Length: 163
Image 1 (cartoon, one colour):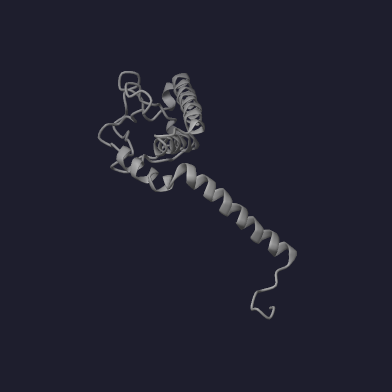
Image 2: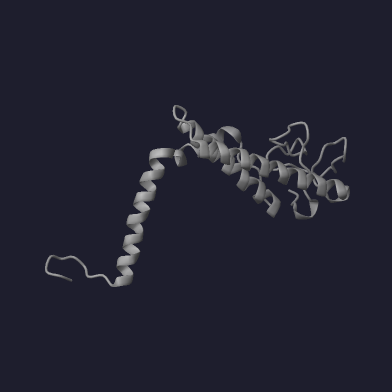
């Protein structure tokens, strides 16, 4: 310690501390644009899923959820800047929407290639067995799609649990 009670830092420790200074600048820049968006997203998700988020069981669920959350983040960032729209958020929103649509199509195609390997699909295409369930709406037996509510997503059965 020096005489003025300030700790002495090694060169490495000073580099770490300088890194935090850089992060303060990044936070200040982002906060000026996005406000406190991290406090808004949870309320939006609660409104979209008032009974709780769907069960995320296999990697495909997590892939879709990840992109879905990014869409919500970009949408709320855009709305936080309604008076001066943030073009990057709108551009990202469109890209993530395309990614989510491609994931949904890929999983539907995979399920169509092997109809025996699905746990939820439309009753018309593949009648659900008596033990089929949905993590949010067990009485329904199908998983509703956000992108197209008339086309429930088919998900591989082998990675699903039964209650």
